[in-house]
Length: 225
Image (tube, rainbow, N blue to C red; front, side, top):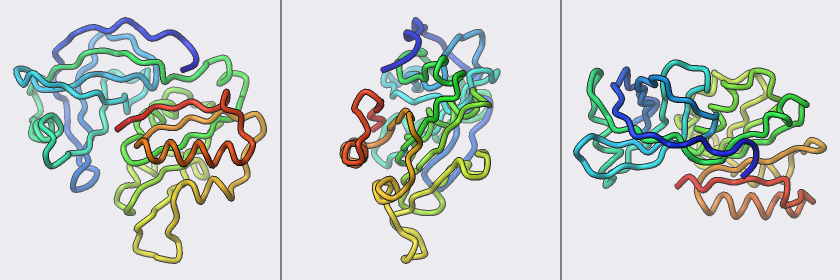
């Protein structure tokens, strides 16, 4: 993608520090970090010891935090997410990483280059990590969700930074998809665009941005699920 090269991955076992429910199906799993070095936006492969199966989850916490947070949606038939939803404080889980290059160019951050983040569902995780890691970052975050309850930790963002796009909300007159918002919103000059979420969203948003004259070299993406 862009920015610094990915750090070398390591294999580790980490203690579960907490599990926080955000909705009926989504929770934040917090584990010990140890002395792992990482870049905001990178991923870890997480699973239960002995399960023999891991899944990739982007970091939800900041690069300076003493712990690792992962935003996880429990999939009904998902072996890993279902198992992780049942862990208790003090249990140990398999945490391998970090890896991946969906990171920001710190020179652009320091120079005040505006960033536009577009996420669907739990694809918001790396953007939460960016926002927490770079307090001076100039950004706006568009978050595409189906229902109001899926606005994960929206109060953690400063006013005007987090823009929810709720497609099946309780107020029909306010329903919209993230592509609807991007076709109408003012886009900052010289911005960089980062997309993370399901493949259909990424295809639709990329098309919408290109229709508005955004160059492909300014668009960075991560297919999260």
